[in-house]
Image (cartoon, rainbow, N blue to C red; front, top):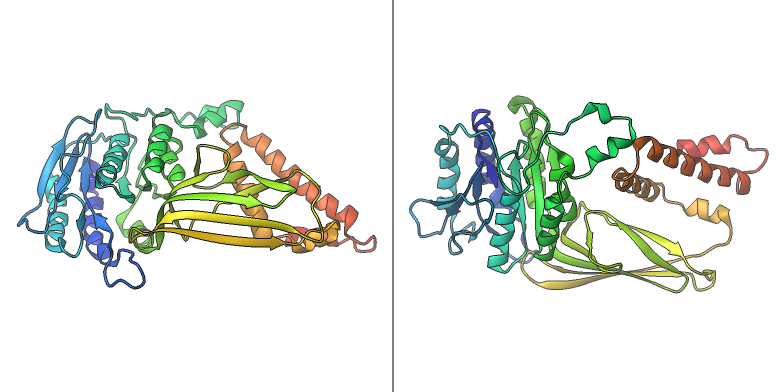
Length: 395
């Protein structure tokens, strides 16, 4: 999905994207034993309306169909929209060559956003397969359509109790849309190129809940930022990915999983749903002690993930983990993994930002850290080694 509004055309961004796609599409992910990728591709350009393209292999030129009703988005074609890249390569290259010139005279500066996501999801739904949307967007969606947003960049709210409002989505449209995307295995990755306020708190909710990624290039300048953008795009397109995933975590007696952090959606307390899962995603799980743990039998954890491969196979991956239990705090501190702790605290704070002032969250983080160090000093450090606590800080 490429935003072809006036500023993107004039800056050369649309041309850069179209040129790069010719190379990137040669490296679509594929199964290890397959010579070519089973992934099909489709193209939409948009500003205040949506343009779908028929790139069927037997066409001499791509055909454009325009959807003006952004309030009730539908997919105007099925046959010829999602195609095998190798089979339709010449038609696709024709299209990518034509897009920058096709909208060169456009003076449209406004753009929609939610209808673009809706259109991609409906296309995947009609094709009866999961998939991923790559959206190249640059402005606050102010055009009349579902998901329309207003500028609420109020610096007077910073460092006040109302600051949390700035981190909450403006409307429920994007959360509802993300839920639908997850239900249909539609992941969204968003490339943002804002020159002014764009409300990441609202737009970013879709990639967050659908297992996608958000890349933001503020005040994008071709000569400075294009290489970083191209590297990010290539990496994201090429990496291995699983779709339409459901994860469940089981434990032995005495403790249980109580909270999950990451690009996930949950309809109940046990099933973790992910529209997509790739090598750069992590799900952090918080466990709670319900009973005494046995030092003899230890603690057992099983993580099972049901997902669809890029080749369309449904697979189950299971990880089993056995952990030692100890009543000695010294053993606990020796086995503590700093990376996991930092990951947990960062994700907890990120979640808390929506409901509490930043000042309060900072205090909670400081108090938790101080409490860990105080426990170490009281229960683990020898009286003669006063420097041990400072060493913990260094670690």
